[in-house]
Image (cartoon, rainbow, N blue to C red; front, side, top):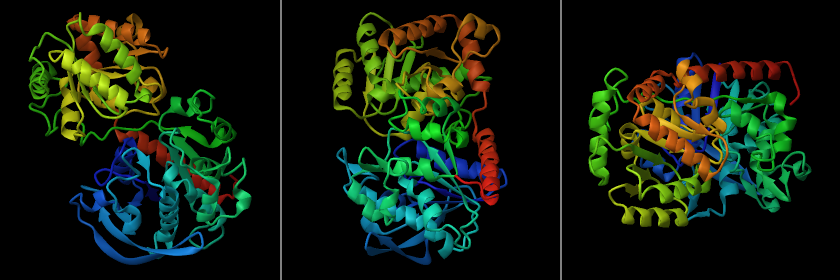
Length: 495
């Protein structure tokens, strides 16, 4: 089976979020599972500055953008340590910019045009590179037009007529909404600008377009697949998703254990495994405390957070809980992230008031993120919603007990510590349901109590460390879904 994986960001070339991690790991796992896979992504400035080898293919692009023709070209490299080829789409005037999608908090005004070009380039690359493609796997709004072009403009075209499209939603909140006149840039007939297909409250919606036109739709956890069909988390697209529910599947993301493994992690002071974590992990904790300026105390639990500082990640709950507990409780917190200025200001103040208990770091640092995962005793993820989440799975591998809200992928991976789940040895963290600071208070309180019960804590840590959340199982589920999509396509099933 031949897969072309189309993505707007991919580790190690470009990244703003979890999509990049998925895009760097899933294609490799699919390849290891027997598929022929290639990746295609924009040639951003950071791609060319990544230090990874790439070369010109000699293939030039001429892409219609509205009434204009815009020229570009294709470069080629490989995903590191794999045989997966990666194709990079130019031109520089679209992608050679300081950031991927925005600067200083403002989206690039030509984002629609940039990703119309990318979407058309993906399909033209099939012809120009003479690629054999069975399944075109698209990701998020930036490639939402691809299934539409495939159905409308490439229907019946040789080499395209049997390509099945799979469209993955990584975060439904980011939809690629643009003013209605950008419909002209897409080159598609205005008849598709209707509430059934591409229009959304008077605007062009590229996420909705992908949902409507794809042969199959996936999202990044089974629970999130159910949640996005409700008004609470459907972001206005719950109707479109419910209409396609027979073609919607939730497949949990995996973890790349070649990068996230305490036994081999080069970012750690000391490596450790499930067999020796009780000696190795405290050394990493002590080194982390020293690095971030906290007292090096073995007897005090260290709680970590890594991520965007916004309400989606539960920062309003974290703010309340830290504010109310920090003065009278022997607990340390280390927080790595940036985002909402209000939360940044609060964290800056609380760290200044309690420098022995709170350390906040604004930098973007993958090595430090690894050390926080490995050195902390607990990890906070009280998300308002969480399509999948990767940090809770990283935490489990590193013996860091997650404290999460029961939503999305967090619900699919974390089993709350209760008498029954301890007895059957499935408990691997602490979970709460109601999105309220008191619920987080109680979950954190239960975790701190368990921390001082070494028998319970040891069981929780080792249960998590022994679990396998690698990409192997998830990649197999994708391969099965690809086969279903391809069979339906070849049998002429209508979308």
